[in-house]
Length: 522
Image 1: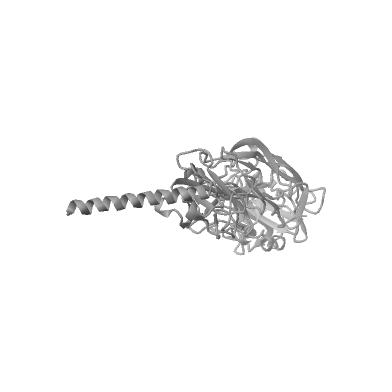
Image 2: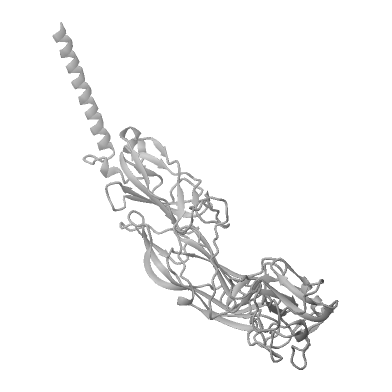
């Protein structure tokens, strides 16, 4: 009995198998594909996946882009990603260059990356490799905002297997040419090139005929965004004329390999900001330009010609700047980051001749007095220290030691807080309300007074504890004391004093035996 049941079962199974084989042969012949393998039919992108033995891969219509956008990036601590590295160009007075170093390795924390949706209409290309191969297997072009390819087939269809998927874009609403089999992408200087990291995708046999939705498509910018700003920040009437800015040794074209390269390779050139070239601007009206560039280390910045007019009188205070190469530190840029290079022209605050400076309606000497009724040769030389009696005759013919009333005008004329000054090729910022800058550890320090476009600089010469002489012995670099001709009682005299915390007239008077500086007036 058992043998009879087994025999009937084998006969039924054999008949079923013959019927299945016959049906499969009939189906293949009906399509004219007799003898073709499943692998051979993978390229028929327009065929129905349920018939071709393939899965359909659907890309999301909303696509994210990370790294720089139209606003400054923030670092992990929430600060704006701009670290200022100020330096001077010794042979070109009055230039500060601030370099934002976002994303460079010397940051204590890495920058945050912020994502935003790619604009609808931007083209991107999807490139698919079989995981074990280096040549392109399939590629499709898409438009952001849609999930259907516009070239390469009506849908992405893949047989069972493992794949590496990449996508790239130039962030333009323009068609992207099909890649050759080598995966090399040509990138031109100025292209906003971005790509995804590798997206591995494994499709199993039981997913054939199904739809697989790719959960995320995030592009990262491979270039960086560099802003150059040139502005005048000196006193009221400073302007910039005939400005040209160049960033040297930029790759003008390059290649990127999706599978094997982590950086660009290409030839070098220079980029000149056309929005800045041969342009002029007034104070606090910066000239700016933005440029998307291929990341590059140790680039040099040059300012071939930039004239900063330090006042309205064209015959005075005009300085032409031109620097490049070793006179400017090299700048390194990181992929996907945003930078600001700010070139700020200060003008020269310190008078270059002993011509009188008009403050409060009076003409003041540009330099301190020295013995022999003369002036020192450098505006930041301390000069001679006079007793009250000697100070009465310290000035040359046509000049006189100021009275109490003449000195009393100066405290109301101190240069505003946060102003920049240039002293002996070094830039200082006034960080108090008393016109004082520097300290005893600096090569120069003192107080600066401003009236319109006129600047009066008094060095922090300190004082001499007793008697007249050529050297002081107290508070040099930290403060200044200047005699008037006005006595204060029988044993004291009035004078001007200043330091980092105050500037005013010494109403209690100074001992007449103490040595102070003298600044002459007409």
